[in-house]
Structures are given as C-alpha cells and as structure tokens.
Amino acid sequence: MAKKSCQARFCRSDDNTHHNSITGSANEIASDLLDNFECVDVFCYWDEGVRERTLSTAENFRRLWENETPMLELLQISNIGVIN
Image 1 (tube, one colour):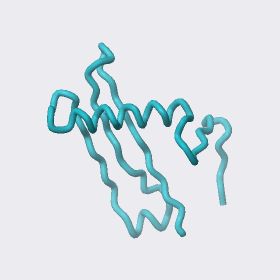
Image 2 (tube, helix red, strand yellow):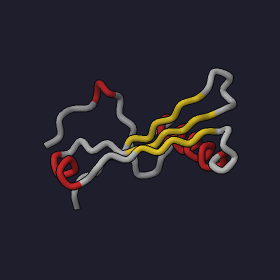
Image 3 (cartoon, helix red, strand yellow):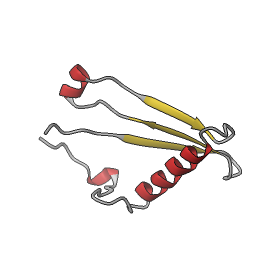
Image 4 (spheres, helix red, strand yellow):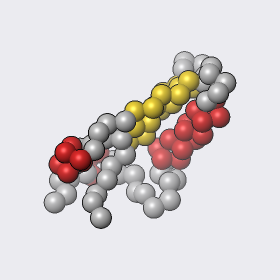
C-alpha cells in the first residue's frame, strides 16, 4: 500500500464562535504528484447547509491538535526527519 498524507486545516474567527473549516490533501509524495490531484474543501459557519460539517471539522482538528486522534501520533516539527 502506498504511503498517503492528508492535511486538516481549520480557521476560527476572532470571537471564537463563528468558524470556517478548510480540509484538503497534500500530495507531497512522488507517486501522488503523478497519480493524484489536489482537493480542498471550505465550509463556512454562516452557511446553515454546512454548519454541522464545519463544527465537526473543527472538533476533528481540535482532537488532532491535542494528539487525541486514534492511530495517529502528533510529532513536533523539530522531531521530524527524512523518512526513506
């Protein structure tokens, strides 16, 4: 199975109650650059049709940031090296 990567991005407004969420994949592996394409989705809190999805993405990002995502280890950038 090929190695894959995904980046979850999340932005918050200044008052910390109105959220925008941004999710997408990062195609940084050589095979991904040839076989895949970039995909980014943006969800805005004020759009009632996607409000729940925005809040769910925000919660998923919080768990990721707090290192609470099952089967994933969050590493500090200083601990990351080149993996062959």
